[in-house]
Figure 1 (tube, rainbow over the protein chains, first blue to last red):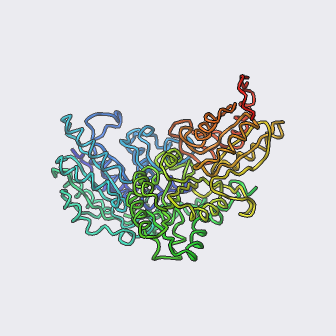
Figure 2 (figure 1 turned 60 degrees about the vertical axis):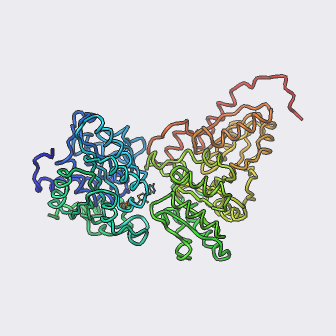
Length: 277
Length: 333
Ligand SMILES: Cc1ncc(C[n+]2csc(CCOP(=O)(O)OP(=O)(O)O)c2C)c(N)n1
């Protein structure tokens, strides 16, 4: 059951997450900033309202599961877990440093509260399907949420998993696609067209919900609907890569961006994130 | 020897950049050459070829199985496809397509895999690739080359056109220092090991990025009174058996150095040649000890796994302290 958290509170959390993302990138000198900023609102809503998890007991069997299939967004995911209380917020300073538990891609053996090690694209949905079947077999009524990128949808394994999700009627499975319309080599529709993505998802036997993934009210609405739907269900979350810092928005180069070592630049990003509503 | 870590301008002369540049030059002369990639045109530098010949670079999106299937299809219609992605996705995600579509049909698909070994350090184990030597070596028809730096990368890219079947080459992320000063410094022949330094007490056989450190270790050992021979085994398959056996007979001590799991790579290839030869020799393998490694800067990870010059030197010194049991074998001739 989603908890009772207001959109205003979620917005404030999303802002805090964006600040953590740019701060962590600055400390690490570089990172998947664009990809991480695009999905920050969705991650926030999931962890601060929807996912039923227990910070004191991360392995609690009845918890909802979350798989960050676009694992290169550990830069958003790890700070989010830290804000939630799974790991100390100070440890974000170690991000990407030699020997740290937190690198560019999340390692479930090292990160408290992380349900799956990801980073190789196209793995989240198959693992999610397996978890979802497993929970059903155990009679546990928990959600399994998988977040992929949109370019990531070009991996056939997603569609193999989608077929299985329909076959096994996985009511508890939610697939979120962060539709920021960019991948590494350019716009998805130029590199390898995905549209009509909603029709494809529906043809594979999933209900499709659409939202503006950078508008918290709309994110909240979409998640509420997904939570109440007997799945498998898919949310196509339209976002802007780099959302929150004008300079990064829609810039394909900011998929993996390098920050200089001038704190003044960082301050500009911080001020901009703070100034936004 | 070329430049060192940090002082090296990765964008100008990285293995990746050299690959893109060399392929574009080859493409001018040879219309059979085409490129195939999976949303990594920029990252692998095959995009340099693509910028020169937009119609000859096929980007299949993030879909590595399709990448190698498409490459095989192109080869079947008379092209020489260069297929590029990160090493881990070439050998494992697309692996069966490499084996069954490219190698089984003995097609001239040239796989240039980047970000191999620990070179994408902070990306962690999803992106570290310490299994490709073992996998690619075990695929029939496959030729496997691991260049030591950007110059050797250029040499290998040129040489692989004449290899009739499938070809696998692994390079790093492109931040590593250079071993050579130019392509004129050495003779590059697929299947022929390169002696970088002569010596009588021990032989260091290395491949890939740590080869430069192996050579530095060899020089450090000289100062300690140990005469080390250093061999660059850039071709893993077919491996230069003669060079290994000669080294065994000459020095009786061999240390292998590779940015790979100690299982199934260069060390095991050398071990097999030694065991089958019947020559008396003691071997130490330096590599990743069958574990998923930590995250971190590649140079830090190399130090952790003794792939740095210091680590190699220390390992050799340990081996020098070991007794080689005398036996009554007569293998001198
Ligand atoms: C199997 C696999 N192939 C290639 C990569 C390299 N890679 C990392 S992120 C990325 C692009 C992802 O694009 P998208 O899914 O649209 O996510 P975004 O970063 O735009 O949010 C690629 C190709 C990978 N991590 N895994």
